[in-house]
Length: 363
Image (cartoon, rainbow, N blue to C red):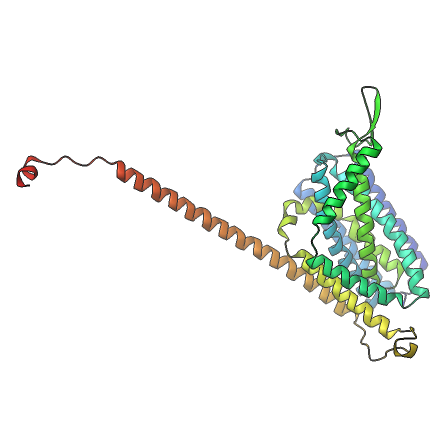
């Protein structure tokens, strides 16, 4: 079911979002700098507030069901985008990207992600409109992705990425030094690509992989291309600031991938149930709809998504606090052992008082 939104609202939304993204891009290009914690926080709050205002407008124009679909889709894409940040941190560290230019790298990555997701959304909408059985495929795909997210080892993927980037360096003739944010530089009269070109390709490849995962996930919540695309835009717009806001917190969210895996598995099951309800495959129930298959509502999905991310985040923070207490206890115990050893050493070296003559004669 598609939301009955006025055409002027959809066009106005695209124009407003395009202008915001353009301003954000020009802001980054004109003022390359390292955002302070306060600046990053204000931007994240701004984009989250903007998404909630948009949800309110959606409610006013199309009703609560479609506003709920947008919020659930936005939260799903936001949680999956946080997963992107882990990979971005690895890429930035691996190529030693100067922190001053990381904003620009992230902005280019976001633009690439939006283009790729826009293409995937158009293709996905057309496929869904003509082939309802694709929900079975999406559901199975998300269940497999959820399992890999929770339990698979990513060492091989890291090795593959290293081989890929080494291949790019060799084929493109990439120099080892950055030249600001430039893609090309001149050294001793010879033109070279800078490492920035490899960083952009690595970011784009990552965006492509995550788009493959995220688009089926949000189509499990809504089949409206407008809601799917705007939810993706709002999820990605605050990603750059979130990268600097979270900073070192990312490596402490050790259970976050379990929360994301649970969300993907839940949406996978929801897609499978929806496929059964819309079933047209002749070898399943004789090609008839399976009416007893329950449909999971948007609001149930919203509650599950929020609860999953909340539990995963709180569990991660609790585990981190427990580790800090244990580390502090170990440091305290070690300090006590050192002090005891020092005291014992000093007591062994303390000279004994000489015996008196009376003591000697008594013996």
